[in-house]
Every structure is written in C-alpha cells, then in structure tokens.
Length: 234
Image (cartoon, rainbow, N blue to C red; front, top):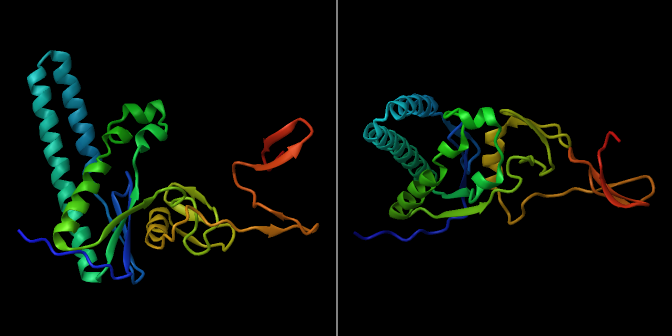
C-alpha cells in the first residue's frame, strides 16, 4: 500500500483534547468545532460498578471480559473521532497540530473524590490512544501532523497571548478583556503555535522600570531575608 507524502501547506488545524470535551478543533479559517462524547463517562462508570460487583463475588474471568468489552467500546469511539479529525484537515487543506500530553497523569494531581469516580478519573482518559489513531490515519491520508508543547496553551489568551483566568469552560483575558470557551481558546493557541510556550508582556511603572505582570501565583520581589514569592494581596 503506497502512502502519499505529507506536503506542508502552511495551514494548521489545532486540536485540543480534554475530558469534558474530547476534541476541539480550530480550523485554519477561523471556526472551532467540538466533538462531545456524551456516552464516554457513563461507559466508564457503568463498567467500573460491574467490575466491582463481579470482583467482590470472586468471578475474575468475568472482570477480564468486562475490561475487554469496555476497551473495545472506547477504541471504537477513538477511531471515529480520529477519522473525523483527519477528514476535516483534508477538506481544509491543512495539517494537524496536537499538544504533547506526555506525562500528564504523573504531573497533574487529582482529588480523592475525582480519583474514586471512574467518569472523572484521569487514569481512564484514553488520550494516548486517540493521539496514535490521529497520527496513523493522518499518515495514511498524507496529512502533515506534528506535536507542540502543551505548556500554557489553556492559560494564555489566543488574541494577545497574556495569561488569563479559567473557570470550568469559561476563559477570560484581563489584558484585552476577551472572553472565549476554554477549549476553543486552547485549540486556537495550538493552531497558532510559534515556538513559544507563552508570550509575556511587560509594563512600565512610574519609576520607568520594566516589571513582570502579576499573576495569580504572585509576583517575585527581593526582601531583606532573600527572594520570596509574595502574593499580590500581601
């Protein structure tokens, strides 16, 4: 089977993956498309309860069968999602940009209540399988595909690049006062990635010195006891 070579066109579709919204695609012409798999979390919850009951009863073979059945359903969903993404990129004549989520399970912490819920638990999130499906289908279709760093893609605004605030699905930028869907904002940052994790903007104080803008983690200033992180409200 001959596979066509992927030709770079200078146009990219940014793909953001998440648990609430499995896929958000920012097309090169502007619109952002969402794929919402409403049955994904119920599948995890239902099969987790079934395995728990069967494991308590000691029927371990049935537990293995339920695991394989759940895996086949999730794999089918990932194949359908990846096929739609590749077809969208071909129609737009663009490549696919994915965020590099390597090691996200070890970096991101989870609460105990989130950990015990199979629908919310990040360990059940099949992001790597979805990534491999997209890459393999894009390679066979001759669509360019690349991964970019995921740092600050969901924290910075796609219009001005300044750090903003995110509350569930809403994102707000304090610099340009723009509001957007958080996943759509992240997908547009991935699409317009220029080799920087986040763009910083400096402001001039009355003294004429350039200082770094305050963030929700506080600013860094020097005191007599040494360097300390000081919260803006301090």
